[in-house]
Length: 396
Image 1 (cartoon, rainbow, N blue to C red):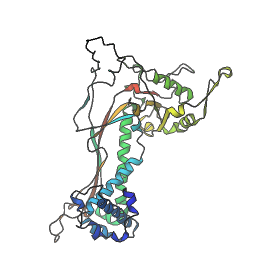
Image 2 (cartoon, rainbow, N blue to C red):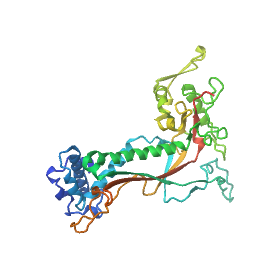
Image 3 (cartoon, rainbow, N blue to C red):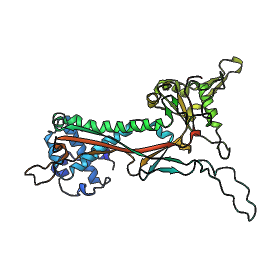
Image 4 (tube, rainbow, N blue to C red):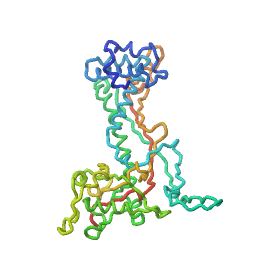
């Protein structure tokens, strides 16, 4: 039974601190299983209990009492971590639609020994008793990168906890979750976007992935329009495997735009019909909007943050990661694919308390500070510039 289904099935009379968090039955703090109904039952009651503290129906000192029992600190930490992950996942991570997501075992250099081309050319004839020819893979330019560690602390005083326990308990995990997803979005967008527009190391004449206008004036970087999008499709579909010269099959694409172009993009993709050649009545073509089923629209606010020159006009057409031609690789540390939230343990010992450490909400011994920390490890690299085309929208 799922967590939220359990909320309606648990009796309220079982919600006392002593019954739920003291040492009875399964000891959750010593290896409780997340899928164990008993663990989920106590987790639901923890949410209810914290909600009561938040809205004032349960006195705050009950929270301090609960933190001294055997199982509550683990349950409390689980709730806080889930708050962080919920906030982390509620923000749109648009980069996932165009990236290959992997995990790496450590912080050492990651090397991709060959580029994604080779081995997929037309098969050669194999004559009787002759050996099969070997495929040639291009290993001349191995790709290397490292993942890095990112994080932040949020310290606050014991007095602040006493004065405003509700906001401090709720806000830190939510803010950390948003910070994590915003950091990811900025980092991975920066792989192909610079302060001057589409990054020149990715979008270049060499890679043949700058949108060229052929349906109107003879210039590059057209503004987002039906004709401009047609040209982007043409440029993308003309790409060839650099080893074999074979066409690169791209079945699904992602149109990425800044918030300033959202309405323009939606008008194009949601139109029921397209009128081609509108300037010439004798050659006008009216067709069903085939773009609607071929294109997924994503709006990336980070484009305008990074690109100070063309952030409000530049747009990108990528091969969808689902068709096997990702623009870049995004890597996370194995076992730590999502942000990790920590609370600093108190280093104080209460006199007369048996010599045991007290709960973290009592603060540090020296200054009564209470400290949250978030840690997140990731990295990435461009692996296939031919999987994307771009226009800075300047018309020149």
